[in-house]
Length: 185
Image (cartoon, rainbow, N blue to C red; front, side, top):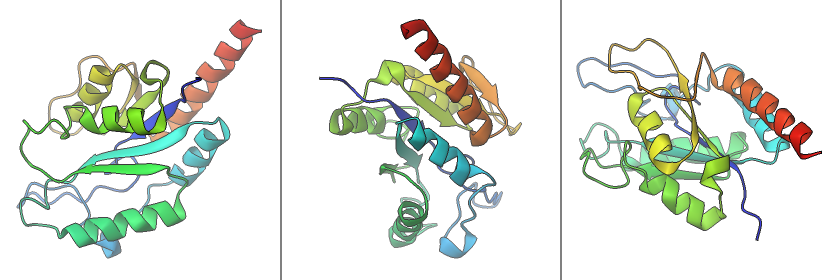
């Protein structure tokens, strides 16, 4: 059986614009009205689909357990994403406890997706904008892309690539895929 390749995507800061609220220490849109897809994201996702990647969103949404956002509002955002973007699946951890195996930097969302979709993690990628994302990708054996927005927080130590956007990550993935084709011929 041939396993599939995937690109695992964090949500806030990778697919959509972050909305920073210092008072509640949140960067997630609280409802569909606040949700804005970042420039060139749809193009990037279409290119990745054309390269036969599964597109799997893995997102922490702890504001639900903190009582800041309603789960139904998160679900509306995800329904909108699945209608308007070529995403195969979305995995969400609503817990704010870092000991939860599904909450990034832990990697059970990725492991579950790999089982369900028969994904070869060693030939897959994770794109994120925070240390927790990259740590989860590294734990899973994925190659990682860190979108560096210079947040005032710890940066990941060992991402495979540092980029400015999902679109830039897609360009690197395209080059890597083309290089691999040349070696196989």
